[in-house]
Length: 475
Image 1 (cartoon, rainbow, N blue to C red):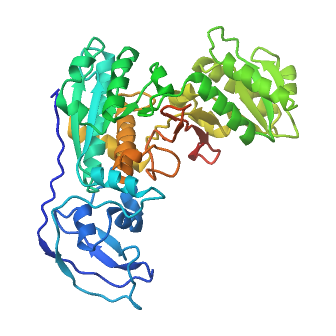
Image 2 (tube, rainbow, N blue to C red):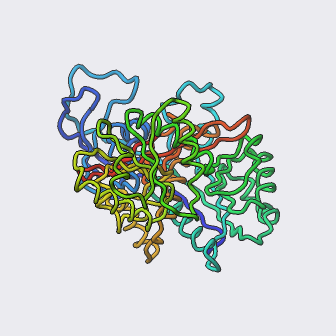
Image 3 (cartoon, rainbow, N blue to C red):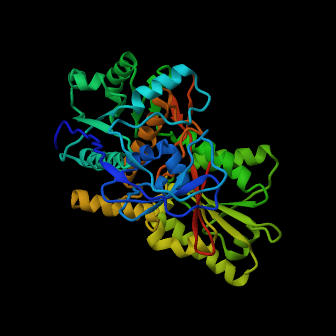
């Protein structure tokens, strides 16, 4: 793999004649623009004295990950914000020379000060400088997974280029035995706006000091020990510990299922690691005076059915995430439903269940199943299909068949941060309301941790509805 890879967005604009085709009933729309060959979103926005954000807001389909501007596409052309609108829309044939300069700063500056505007303009008017410090090699599983993640990052850069956002990418092979201090002597490292990495905890001390010294944002994409998050405000950590995930899941379980009767089923799995969740949930139910029942997969049906309410909907919680025990539980419940068809049963599962759809999908739908997770790979969504197809075209291979595709994770991370940096500059912090990016697989929303960096706190309920629709509920 090439150690240094640069992405440049080259905007060469020619004198073009643009027809505004037909007036629109919407008073905010001036007319339509038919896309010509080699036109870009940036060039079209400049042609009509619009910001890129204004053009995208008028054409929401552009927000879809992997969106490509194609010849013949009809785009809505809005009036620029704060511009005087004519009393009536008219058709015209304006022609302008489109500038070759970089995109102007977005007109949406929130409540930031003039200092923030200046900082934003510094990044918005040039290529964002991105560094990737991960094990990028083919020696072992870590390297192969991170190569796929990195390819997703590059795909995000390519998609953003079509929005007029230019990215200059530098990649270093930060293998497990790499001398990170030596890698950081490359002058390009200190010039980065954002560095993605590392994969190994032992590399954190050096990188943490480096980004703090050089005012660089550091995105830690995976689960490593990073105590530096407590006092380094340049760090963003995506990973959430099992304890944090349990606490968040319990909180939202209590909100979602406050009118349900909980049933805990002991699955006799001596290897289970779900005790912290089930005991924590039971403790919270006890504190709230909520009645629940306990039963066991080996219990005879006549006793098993007594754990279920006939007057309330039941929510079933197993104490294992394993597939064999889940299969036995479904068989037990299916048998019980033959004799007690009026029982209302919902299953509440674990992230591992997302990998069992080949075996248990029908029962997921049948029992209105909710699965908590920090990601959801939806193979039938148009955005997922587009990214998988582009991955095949670009790299002549398929993504690894794992529950969370590494390439799509890299795409989501890079798209979220690079678009945020383009809009807000160094003031981007990933909090709620700072990004409208419709994630493909991995939702992100950060909050301040202690007096230090930012930590992702977003989770999902993946809901398999009885009408055979899968929805995600973000919280």
